[in-house]
Image (cartoon, rainbow, N blue to C red; front, side, top):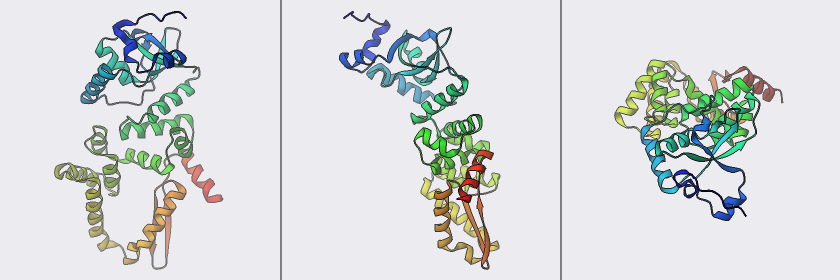
Length: 284
């Protein structure tokens, strides 16, 4: 068997696979860093310095735990997933990186694969995930249920993440920077006015509220407002139970408006494709 040639900066030592297993894993090859161009569909927007330094230190000590994913081009390779790892390799001065080459020709397939590969790695912030879900729905014309299947999530999780895009820009920025969590974002969404949402986000940061504390606080805020305009029947705990059951059935936000033995049920949708999905469920 021909002996494998040595790689620049000892890259073989950076791929944590036993020699026999590495030889059998033919899908993983090593390519020059200069041959790889960034992915135009990259969902990641925030490359935090602290996180990058941790990744660089990890690669320096343990090597690449996952290869990059690329496709071949006329000039070399285009990145599908692994932007942070590619940047870390450049910071370390590595000349080559381990990659898996995917056979992708259509731009629509590249978009789907790039977004799904990144989403499945669970290292995007909530806003990056929300924008990635939105692109899959709008540019590929697929439903929230199909997105959920592709990334291995339940529909309710997809819907909740998408709802973050309805927050005011200052609040979205705090979530993207990691100052507020996705759970905080959902609590803030319980308030309807944008300025009230911004004020509440600042309150959460100022007082260091946990997600549960934020949820309790917003319930009190809404409770004070409801006492002025809402009848007691609308506070019935059974209505909240039914709302939660319907949310799981329809995979979207549901509100039951009930007053004097009558009312209405409101279902939220986030695209025409999503509306078609809801109509299909209602027809069953």
